[in-house]
Image (cartoon, rainbow, N blue to C red; front, top):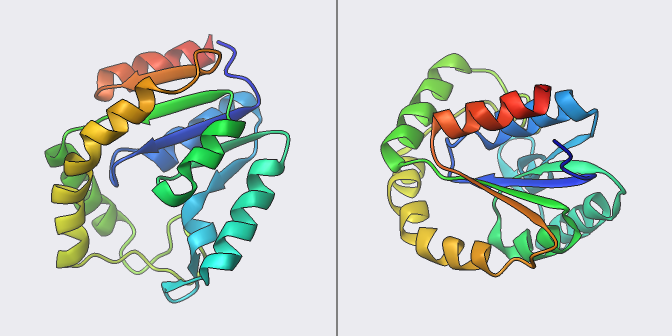
Amino acid sequence: MNLGQRIMVFGSSGSGKSTMARRIGEATGLPVVHMDTIWWEPGWVSRPRDEVYAMHAAAIAEPAWVFDGNYSSTRDERMQRADTVIFLDFNRFTCLCRVLKRRVMFHGKTRPDLTEGCPEKIDLAFLKFVWVHFPRKRPGVLTWLAEIPPHKQVFHLKGRCAVKRFLAGLEE
C-alpha cells in the first residue's frame, strides 16, 4: 500500500494515534512527529502559541512525515500538506479504557510520544475530556473528513479490526 510521503493520523485520546504513527513509521521508514512533543515542554508546561505554530510549520514543511495528533487549530494545515489522512474512530469506552491502561503502563515514566519530563498523568478533567469532548466533536470531524479533497487518500478506521487490517496491508 502506497500512502505517500506525508501521513496524518488523528483521533480521540486513547484511540491509538501514537502507536499507529509509530507502526507506519516503522513500516515505511518515514520520520514520526508527535504533536504532543510540539505542544508540551517538560513538566507539562504548554509552549507559547507562536512557538507551537512555528514548530508545527517547520515540521509540516519537511518532505516526509507521519504526523500524530489532533489539535484542531493546526489540523487544516497538516491536511493541506498530507498525502494521506487516517482517522481512528473508536468509541469513548474503548478510548477511556486505553487511557487508563496507558496510565498504569507508564506510571512515573514519560511515554515515547511525549516530551521528556512529562510523566504519564491522569486527572478527572482529562477523563472527562476523553468521555465528552471528542464524541461531541465527532460529527464535525466527519464533515471535515468528507470535505478533504479527493486527490488525498482518506482512511476512516472504525475499531481494532479495521486498524489490524490496515496495518497488515502495510506489511504486504
